[in-house]
Length: 529
Image (cartoon, rainbow, N blue to C red; front, top):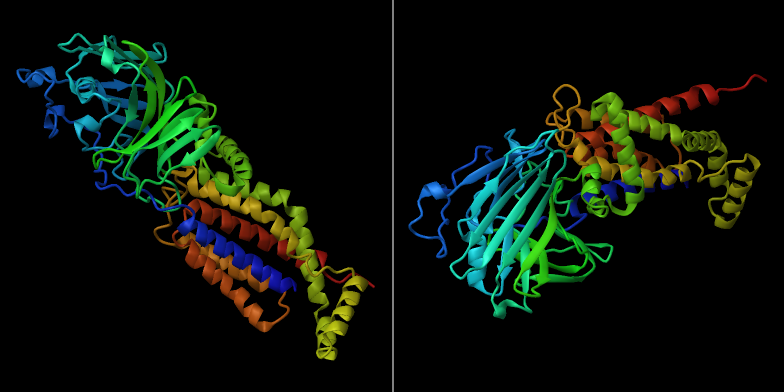
């Protein structure tokens, strides 16, 4: 009984881990055009294919088209005066596979897909708001510790007297960008209609390993609930109505979120002319003047940074069924990092702490297995004697367990209680941005990637084999052979898993071997007569 339950436990973990890794969520949204590799060196806007619009004066020369680079402690932003838009948002702490800062705006996209975009029912106003040559005003193009806030303002007045203004306010030590938008002197026919403020097109962050396990695409926080839309087969815009805190585009590690100031509006999700996805907020036009202020979070899925941006934005970090355990484990991992300054060693320390917490349960499990092993000769004798009488066999077995105070399930039930913690930590080590590009030792430069030489998963498989050999054999020999196959199965599974997860499993196995050795050799040795 115990051996079958133990086998079932291992098989369940193997199946669930493999299933969630391959099919945990739908595949990432596939765009018609994959984002190009990002280069930090800004390009002149005149090099883009689609600069001019009918609203731009054809007599204007290249010198009127400007790019401005704004620096803070955490981001470097490139802005353009055609449309008063963002062209690039580079994250200074995070790099791509070419060791260049990650850009959260799709590189190589059309100019009219750059954020931040106005959209009206009147296409003429839309073109003017987003493509006209704006005048630029600013005091500085960098923030410092002593000058923590910087503002860039773009203004334009069209031939009909409508005034457009976009202001971007940057802060020195966070990923928030405040945006103030205003339009004055709208015509009478525009009133009682709606307009949209959009981020497009798509999320430009480039990852080496885009896991199919993690959702990549639009997210809305509606009525205190997360909604993740799948856009593969959607041909018309999606609208969500209700109490909307924010609408966002997410990848495995990064997020762009438009945070609603009123906490009550309409969220819009759409495909943008083959250039990816647009997400935004929709508002009514009440009179001839539009004035709106909202915030953009453009940064990593770091708990502290997300909390600073909005109290509900942290909820975009989704660790699955066991998030209530995963989040405290991540916080503990980050706490230990303050002392180790290496997330690999923090994983080891966290594994040791978890093992200490569960030591009484593990101890009870090993003791129960040891007692069942001692009873094997008597169990086999009863099985042979009553093999043709199932009822009598069960009665004698229960009497034997009662006499020796043995529990056939005592070895596995403590293990089952630890499974939720395992899955919670599994999700943390699989998805936490803290492990992205975090080095360990030797050739391991990124704990979120697989071991290129497969040393750690093979070592882990070896420890599982040793652990299985130390486990007292009992029951059907076929079950024992299957148990010995588990190290092979897990090793194959873990070959392509993140090194951080492999290290956790390896250290857990080593601690289990030590504990099992102690119980077998010290606690269970014969007592003097």
